[in-house]
View (tube, rainbow, N blue to C red):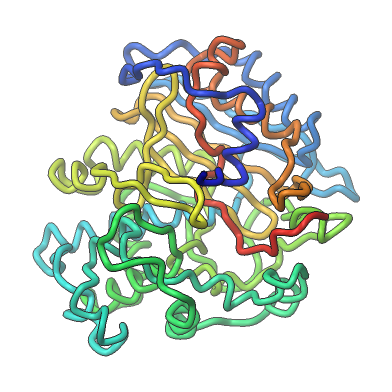
Length: 422
């Protein structure tokens, strides 16, 4: 029997089980009005459940609510607020995909051409002609993930690599070499796919090759600025610019008390996960994407063609090109989640970009590991599910919770940790 992912088990344990409800597309015209008091209570509940700080923005058409609860610094008790800058981790993949689809529209990139056409000599000979650009973007290349090689102590049950790499600068080539040193997970194009950050480091290298400028520079000019984002950027130093929270990492109890990693060289994330943004900017980005301001309708349709992708070899999600779908009782939503050391993020939008939520947390991997090597359910997870349903469906009632699908809260988060009991 296939084991569920860590976060899937948490949601199932909380009673969020699929009941066969057919989703109806959510739109700005049919979505429920924002209950501002209830939304604030819901983020308060996340903090009260044990999360240091949480900030969120919800949009419904022209209505916007932004709220926060908790502290940005556990020592000074400095409060969090909704506009804080935040490391968004793998949501970076949506930005990279948009940039490559823009190039596809211009005819400079063929998604179904082999990666070797653009990056000759990078992939092993037995995979070079079989691995396409599309396979990078939808995680069906089956290349190994570089995280385990970049942070080897995680496989030994130790956070040592996390501290060793705080100020280490990784090059994209180094990260790809790490990924290629890991076992492949299948043949190129095989289903289900296997989520791998290595894909998006290669995608960034490919983007740089075809545009003649760094991927970060191109994305900044043609995606971030074009979407009207004012607080989104690729960091050039280990420091986060502007007002921000500290980033507390617990690493499933290996770090006790949790340690602040808000100062960290994010080259390890690169075009797979280095971007800094705000919850407001994330909603603006996905609305711009889903309403056709960044790519045309044909490429957007391709972006939403999903395939099953496994995360950590455990649970399959419906992944498109740089984003995935999540079916809730009130409809289908699109977006991505992200996790870096000390920060978690999720951003989801209805299919027309009308109803949206983006939220950030400043404590990651806060669960404890059980005897089966998987994290135990935590009250924060239940509180976050309530906030997600209230934000997108207008209700967090028991009926809504029991008709929501058994879907991971942060489905792309599967760090390569030693799976032993604590």
